[in-house]
Image (cartoon, rainbow, N blue to C red):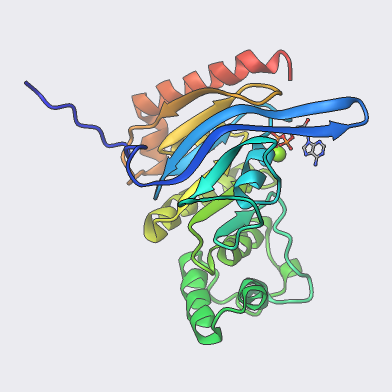
Length: 269
Ligand code: ADP
Ligand code: MG
């Protein structure tokens, strides 16, 4: 008998994040809006999970619940063994806009994280040096945000989000404002940084190629009220070359599947 070998992380082992029966409803002038409806999701430590779905299906809301910035109406998100109820300090967040302080240089923006958290100065400084090197910002430590390209600003934002070595890195359409070539480069870098840091990452993206290239699993959501339509494994190993991956039959198959699922939802987007 042949044993079945799978390269995927077993989601039952070492769950870092467990979302159970999560629903979020907001009160609005036109009545109640259900942003998320009965979402169940388990993310093992070290996984890279991509989330794709039409606008308004609750992707940002899902990340905010994990971060403790939005409260669940019912159900729960559990990080390690505690139910998330308040803003969490053990997460990192990267948004579409880098949101850097214009009057602080690159290093000053990265170290803002340490100041807000009261981290040990020497330790934070060493970690900042490592991240600056890892993200290719060496030589730009003293540059001001307006002197940087969009891609470099997002690198600074990534360094700031990783400075305190968070358990989970949440990324909400982080490369949506970048041109196609820069975005591709950032995808390659993010893949390498994920491997080097072994951080658990949840990435929300509208790009199918980005979602599949980076992820161990891709979650596709339905239009509002957001539900998980399907969770698709990406069994391409964790050492991915961009060009070779794009042409890999398995990549092509999975990307087409994600596109189909999203296409089916767009009629109502
Ligand atoms: P996505 O990120 O997938 O585009 P969101 O999570 O931002 O979607 O929003 C999901 C739905 O919830 C949308 O209809 C949005 O208008 C609504 N929504 C999000 N945040 C709030 C809020 N704080 N108050 C009221 N409605 C909200
Ligand atoms: Mg959003």
